[in-house]
Length: 366
Image 1 (cartoon, rainbow, N blue to C red):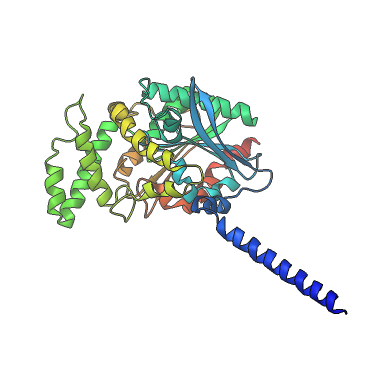
Image 2 (tube, helix red, strand yellow; image 1 turned 90 degrees about the horizontal axis):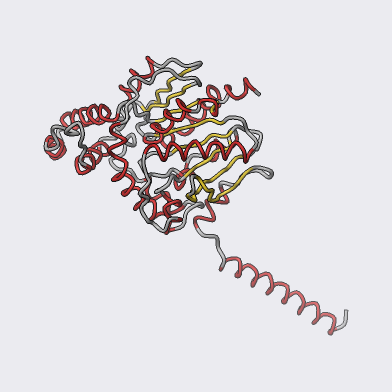
């Protein structure tokens, strides 16, 4: 090999080596963000469904996330609680395994999350229980048309369980089944019993500060036609502290999960916070007034999930209600070591029940 050839080979090698080094350095300089890393971990299979979009519902752009590994799977629409507390920004913490068995739809209701962002954080004067029920039914019809389905599973959590029961009563023809999580039975009685149970925990623990603050709320929640938000805030403070919101935790840290959500921006996270506060102010009265004491006959299957330690929507009331339900099929799942956010606290247990007990309703038809 000539000296010239040797020098050319060395030069080529060095250039290639430098090129690789520069390439690596370039890759390092474009390291994915935490949100992008979470998105990578949540990837669906090729041919699956992964959509994040605004759809028009009753004239208002409202944001949905639609995710599933197999388009042949049934749709499960999650109707979040609050009012105004979207599950979309924290769904990444539990939902991915569900997407192997269902096409899961998260929806930010009017006044909530990304939908509130789209509205430039302007309060919606039309926000009411009836309006959001209408939105829910219109969204269901849109999903069925878009994805070529005849029915879907409707899962309602807390405030969403009020909407869920109302939709199940009004449009059972659209549902394979209704799934209630943290089911509201009677809003006012929920508040009374939850308060009593929280007070009992405070007294048993010897927490004099909690006892004093809770006693100051009496009578709770107050007059029949009045529910002061200030009282509810204090009751929920101690409900959370004694694990009635999230089992074993003194506070709900889920608000931080949105900071890593692939579906949310920092602006959306702030919108979720502000929209939640406004939604509660507008809808608290209707939520507390909701009562299903006389709504016990269903024309679709009903499945209820309840955390044993739930004192936000007390499981004791859910058990009593379940015993009176008449439906083509029904089942109550009481989840140990869980409270109000059972889907977050025991996602594997909930998924196992969904796959083995709930999904067969779809399989029996198809």
